[in-house]
Amino acid sequence: MIIYGFHACKSAASSGKNIIKAYIIDKKTIPDWLKSINKNKILQLEKASFEAMLPKDSVHQGIALEIEDITYSNIEDLHNTNNNCTIAILDNVTDPHNFGAIIRTAAVFGISHIVIPEKSSCKVTPTTIKVASGGLDHVNIIIVKNLSQAIKKLKQYGFWIVALCEKGDQFLDEIDLTGKTALILGAEGAGIRRLQQENADFTAKIRTSNSFSTLNVSTSAAVSFYEAAKQNGFNFL
Image: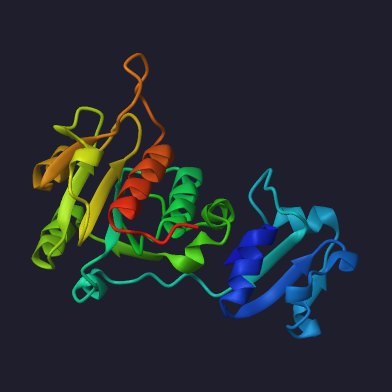
């Protein structure tokens, strides 16, 4: 997989990921953290050739890394997690920019895992990694075949399931989010599917303006992750 952008590449290198190749446009701007790898792995390319490797209109900052493909975690990893754990479940989130923003926010507020379905969901892409800006190195991604079955398994593991939706029964800050909690978020439009809402222990809404209440899914994630972190005594700066 080829990732790009200064922060995403620096985080990957700092976390010990195996760098197969490093691609740069200008050798004069090789960052210090890249100088530690074998010089034979660093290739200077013309701008046109460099940009041809990446998605169209990528904001690459003149650096890209070829790394091994992302390794996904397993739902069973959550069986023996500690009792002060918040995770996220994404249903119908297909936009890589939204997914990347959610990963970044999850890393900021100590969300340990994000669960996504095998179908109808964005996977980890170079764009996702760029938007996550290094966050992916702090959050585990789990792919499941059946989201409803995964939710039932999480309940067996001791997790309370909270579905975020505009017409939730309670405000999010009225729900006890301490302990093992899974927050379900859905994309705008389709939102969380009916079965996921029915399997949730609570449906919650975020306090918003009376005149305009619609939030982007990544913004909803940021608000809900912050609330969970606050309730769980997260060590804020």
